[in-house]
Length: 300
Length: 86
Image (cartoon, rainbow over all chains, first blue to last red):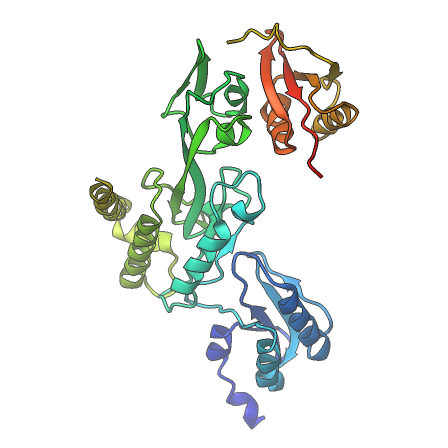
């Protein structure tokens, strides 16, 4: 068939159309940010799955959703129908993929940060950006790590720095037990926090019955996670920090590094290994120090 | 600071015989049967119950007065019931 030879599979894949093993059938991957879809979007997806597919969808491993059994000839009509409900195709291939996130502080009692907001910002800034290989961001709200951030090329985990407020404290001892790191001691009505043991989970502050802790939310990042054909646990390079500006400077620097140093089909960790982990760590630490020092100067 | 002699305990509940989430359910049921302002003493095990039950009680809006370490692997959490506004 002449028409068939004109199908540009690479372009289709870029636009989230995943070729099925059945000839001329595609699964359409939907653009989802942070695992959240509105009821209206779901209505549009349902209609398309019914009209053009086989009346079902598949939830992907990374919080997206695919409508299988679509016919190549319907591509334009499907896009149009979905657009009416605010639904657009996602991407595949060598570019920035779906940003995954837990519910975050919007509804979760454990979360230290608004992961949905961060996911939206990451998506706006990087989604579908062309790179030598695929690139994944994942964002989780706290140390419970529901989102498994270390599986991602860049993982972002919420945490919080706590400061004890002596005047409010009733010395009840709840925080001492709430802490899983044994970082808190209560002696003679005074709380001491061992900063080397503290993992920024914020459980002390969240358990405190009289809110005798100041909470300063921030981020713990990891780099180089892989969980496919190769395994590598994303690793931290810089300590906890509170500035969103620093967060995006670090993301920008990493994306630039990947763009300039990766070979076709690389993942971030492969590029780091070739470049040298120590050299990469130094580069990241430099960006971190410059951003944090600048912040300190601005804060006076 | 650990002096709790001035706190009058109205009811007690023992949650050392159950595991999460029944620990909190039992605590919640005990509080529901009490009047606004009354004090409940919750007897609980070290570990997961003492890490989580106080926080859940706080999130329900009740007032935690004290966590007493019995030095035998158990704790007593003193809670003042706060009635919902609704």
